[in-house]
Amino acid sequence: MNSPLLSTPASHWQTRVARAFSRAAPRYDALASAQRDIGEALWQTLPKSAQQVLDLGCGTGYWTQRLASHYPNATITGLDLAPGMLAHAQAQYGDAIRWQQGDAAALPLDDASVDLVFSNLAIQWCPDIGAVMQELARVLVPGGQARITTLLPGTLSEVATAWQRPEALLQTPDASTVQRAIQQSGLRLTQHTRAQRRFFYSDMNAVMASIKGVGAQVARPNARLTRQALATAQVRYESLRTPQGLPVSYHCLTLQLESAR
Image (cartoon, rainbow, N blue to C red; front, side):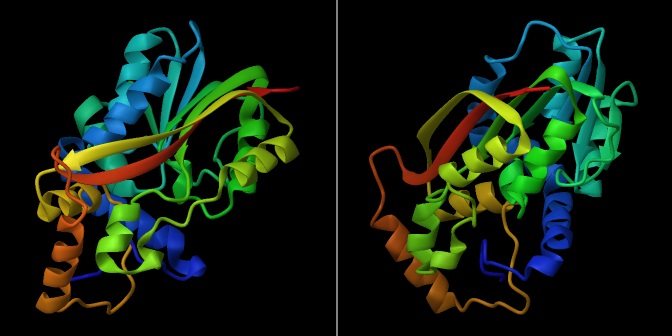
């Protein structure tokens, strides 16, 4: 059994993330309740109109399809690093949406070609947040807007505690690093909020299914767990149980950005 959420060499990071999310595509929608809940709050911040819309890190296309319905006269692009996610999205929602494989830090889009970027819990997987913000600044039209949620340090802290591995935490930039990247890109930060969201699961199997099932497991090569290690982790996690169940914390940063050009 691969140990969950372990760090991996940067040179292979994108490939492993793409593979993890491609593998997760068939069961992602059934297990992404936390991601959907967080995305609903972001959805409420959308502008009234848009013509060229990018869903950055579109995954299985859930939000992309909603964007297409919300902006029926717009051109909608769903972009993701994982080909398996894109294949699942295209099979489910068809070709009216443009499905594009690509990296958020090197967008395969023209300069000033997008007036709205929507991105729910995707850019935390990008090792270079500065490059992501530079690319957003490049592809947004003058006055174009971005609505983004990302994760902050401390996310999945209960999982790290259970496994007694600090490296099990997602390696995400802190809020000040994100804000500095925004400032250096030339984008204007018009609003931001930080919030801790806790979700609850019946047992550790459900916790791990929710994480692995949405692709959030990039394992260290040849990492193995014994049954004893698994049993010990379960005991540690049970010590965190609340009346609502076993907690999983997401530390979220919500951003509203605008092109300053």
